[in-house]
Image (cartoon, rainbow, N blue to C red; front, side):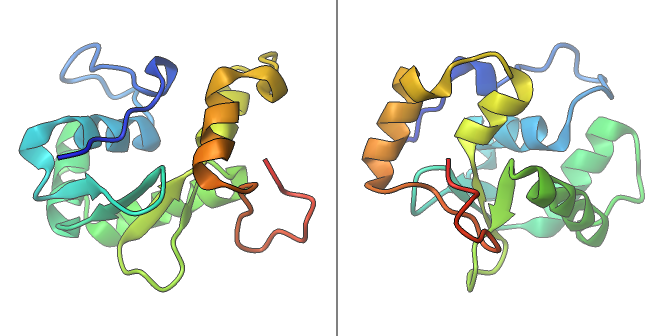
Amino acid sequence: RERIAFPDWAYKPESSPGSRQIQLWHFILELLQKEEYNSVIAWQGDYGEFVIKDPDEVARQWGLRKCKPHMNYDKLSRALRYYYNKRILHKTKGKRFTYKFNFSKVVLVNYPLLDMANSPFFLAQNHFNGRDTVFEGDSGGGRF
């Protein structure tokens, strides 16, 4: 079974199980890395694309991590939409519970001084995609 690898900078292992400082996108990456959650959330399709197979369980796990027992998928999906404007991830059109990370944007958000044009990861991602990554709603100026 093929697993998608992503850069070390994109994955922050749990510093402490009760840590409330983690961002949702880091938490999603944590779940995607753990085999025991493959029935709940998994990579699929294009590079960076993942599907939430059990939205209620992902929301429950996020609620446990953030000490918010009333967390549900509606609240979690609202939090995911926050990342659309930042272009860290976006919803995959026409696929339910399916999202796609923009790892090159994640690098720029977390490492603004990194030269992405010459980054081996960026070059590999564009080679993998076979084209520039363009997000829904972009008018041509939002290519990465």
